[in-house]
Image 1: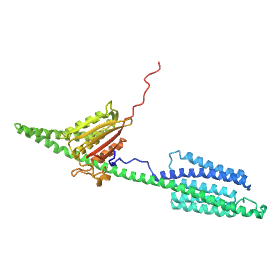
Image 2: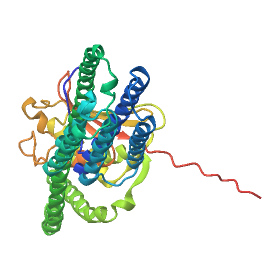
Image 3: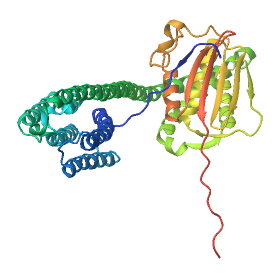
Image 4: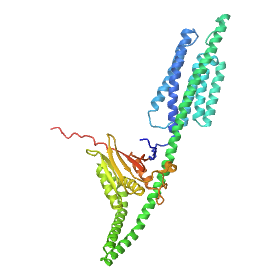
Length: 443
């Protein structure tokens, strides 16, 4: 379809503390950086020992790399648990990285090692993910480690054994190592910051959805309280209207036209009374009323009720051939579909098209009216409470409908139809079949 659509889905429910969720993502990125650093440092250590013939204690350096690998493996296994990743834990992980880097550089030339800039990685991660006090603690630790490496370290070569003509070669090698160290550090920092930016954007989106969901829940609660009070208050005037209409029916029994109007009013009053009476029962028994039913039967019941409420409506109905699939049915779902049908009738009560289709996963209900269509200037606000395109509407029907369908893993979308009018598309997931049970028992 080439027409523009507006997705008005309900908000997504998200879990708990989003800050702890962000820490978990950063710790996961840290395990990736450690893995990359482990392979890189191992390769450089092998080159230094066997290619450059440096004075490195192989066993001690290997033990340091093994300790780094064990920390990384333990961290990865820890991420499999549901315990939240707190700020002190993430700070402890960065501290372990700084100490292990320092231990490795102590054995490989100290501050003269061109890859000593890797000490900046824990500091940059702390500065971009943790509160300022942890950042300053990490900075103090990194500076202390670097300062100690200036004095305390194991040199890579014994300078007394190096010929003077070899010094320019070693200097060029050191400069090359610094360039390579700078390149690798930039790549790791750039990769981490880019991934962290994506994580922060996702966290911001979750925060916005959580805020929107909380606002909608508060609005739904306010509407429920008002509806309960209104239902209680409307009982008296509806009873009075029923008595007066009965007296009018007896008094004007000889006027057939007036009797038809009185009976129509009595029918409408009865519908309103039954709706008010079922309101409290439906809320109280809602968990018990959830059932699995064929989607065509649910739609037929809703349309029958709609015809009683809107006898002036003219519509056509179509459906896919074959046996209709089943869906989860609740009282709230019937009311949601009824709201959409009423919206179509309010737009134009003539020539409303209703079509029911389904596929392997979902059922689709499409309602097309011949009204003026959706106003472009208010398209983004549709589905929010108290937003209506009808002069006499309250703006809560579509809001309640989107919330109800979202609770059933469904959705509703509105389109401006290319041939005029509005097309309302409802998606409802098919109910999962019950698990098969073995009916055969052993003799």
